[in-house]
Amino acid sequence: MAILTAILTHLDAPRVEKQLSYLRAIAPEARFVICHGGKRADFDALAEPGALFIDDPSLRGPHFDQSRNHTLRALYDSCVRDDETIELVHVVEYDHLILRGDFERTLTELADRTGAGLLAKWASPRNDTNWSHYLRARNDAELADFIAGISRRDDPGVRLGCLGTGLLFRRDAFSAFCTLDDPPSSYFELFVPTAVHHLGFDVVDVDAVADVYMAIRWLPEFDLATALAEQRAGRTFVHPFKQIDALDALRGA
Amino acid sequence: MSDPLPVRIRERARKDALRALLLVLGRDVACAACGRPLFRVLPIVWRGQLRLIGATEPVRAAFGARDTLEFRHVELDHCPAPERPWVR
Image 1 (tube, rainbow over the protein chains, first blue to last red):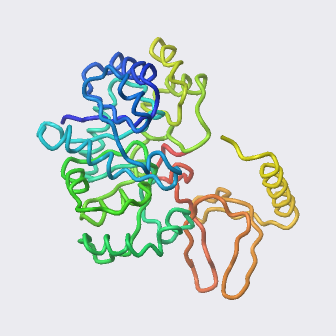
Image 2: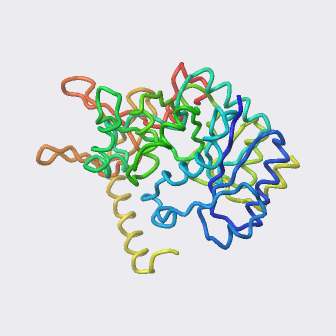
Image 3: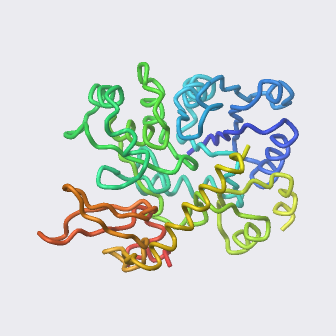
């Protein structure tokens, strides 16, 4: 089962290329694509041929207003739609560090075992929670109308949430999401799992079914020493790890 | 870019005051599923609302019985259970 891993980044060209070099050293068979949501000049300086520039104003505004609609649509149009070999799409932020070269096998087994359309950390319904993004969105009439228009579920009022990195889409769920007609620019940690759920796909919390995301968290950041410790413990992923300049130490460990 | 100094001082004072208030008057709330602490809050009932001052972590809330409101972890990697032996 072929996986495409998309890396969302805003970093300058040398650091993006350093990260790609690290990833291709530990996982030479894996397919990576850069989705650059930063400055145009940084993107233009990239030597990576297949990289995508994401021209979405929401990525350059407040974090909690960020949408992934443009990013995922661009990824779909450029890399997935016409390549039938891609069966899983793995979307990570630049600080979602891959530690093991066999990460694709781990994710493939997880996708096979669960049959989920979307696997993500902390993915679950949020209507009975105090999650701030749910509370912000619960009176959003535009979102409610849109979801009601696409929903195949009995209750169109269900809202899901998840962490925004480490999203693993099955191809059919990714295609269905990316071909939505004029989706609202809602915060992605709520909108992506909610829309996938209402499109009729299962959305599964990775932590409920496996230990592969146990070193992924929102805060605090991992420093090099703790990332190395997680690597020695056999972890596949670590997040958030922002010390791109220190990747050589992890490659050599 | 960080906030201006007066804003940071005001925010710090507000947090310190809340921390002191919770230390004296707060109650620890544990997860009804795993028993681990969720947060320390000051519960206040007012005009049909139960306010949990100091509630910061994402939690699920539901009545477990007619007179019992229960709180549980949203983030399962913090909530040990027999079916999740990898959560410790």
